[in-house]
Image (cartoon, rainbow, N blue to C red; front, side, top):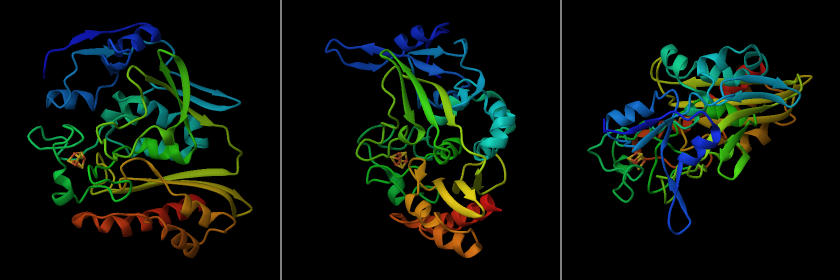
Length: 333
Ligand code: SF4
C-alpha cells in the first residue's frame, strides 16, 4: 500500500471542502478520497489500484448513521451499516427487496462493517480491472479492454460499449432503483437530490467516469418513498455459489398489486449490465395483468432486449429472462 495522509473531519462542510481541489482555471478536481467501511477501498489500495494522497475518514460525521421514518418515507443515513439496514423492521416490511438485496451481498462480516453509501460506490469485479498488470480502459484510460475478446463469462450484456463491458457489481443499488429511491448528495454548493437510477453512468467512451458525483460530493442519505400497502417487492440473485459471491444475474421487482392485478411495476436487473438497469419494456408488459407463470415468462422474455454478447457471456441473455420471470412470480406469490 502506498503512503497516504489521514484525516477524520467532524463536520460535513470540512469533509466536502477537502474532497475537491480548486485548480487555477477555476475547475475542481478530486482531492482526498472518502473512507467509511473500507471493505472495497482497502483491497484496491493494497493492490495499488487506488493510491490516494489523502484519505478522509468520514465515520465521525454527525447524523449519517441513523435510519429515520417519516410521512415521506424512510431516510437511511449513508453511514448505516449494511447489516443494520437489512435488519431494520421497516426496511424488511415495507422495502423487502432492499433488505433481501443487502442480505444477498458479500458475507455477514463484510455487511457488519460496510456502509450503505459505500456499497453503492463499490468498483467492478472485472478481473482485468483488479489485475494491476493488465491493460484496462477503466483503470488506465486508452490502454484497451482485454475482456472484450478474453475472459468475459462474468461480464455485462446490457449497457456495454466498445471501451468497457464490466458489470456493476452491487445488489443494493439494483433494489433501490426498483423501489424508486433517491439520494441526498452534499457538495460545496449545498445539497442536491437525484434518483438512484441516475447515479451510475454506462461506460460509453469514458469508462473511468463511473458516477454522476462531482469532485468532493458525498452521498449523505438514501431516501425510500412512502408507498401504499398494495406495493410489494422482491430481490432474486443467481450466482455461482450460495454465499459471498457476486451476481451472474439478479432482478429486483416491485409490484403495485390491487385485487391480484398489477397496477404498476418497477423492474431492474444487475449482474448483466454495466449499471443497475431498469427494464421499462418488462414493466409495461406487466401493467394491467394478473400474474401467472405464463405472464411472468412473457414479461421476462423482454428482459434481454438490446443485449450485446461477447462469446462466453452469451448465456446471460437467457439467464436474465428466466431470473426476471422467476422474480416476478415470487414477488406476486
Ligand atoms: Fe477494464 Fe472494463 Fe475492460 Fe474490465 S471490461 S478490462 S473494467 S475496460
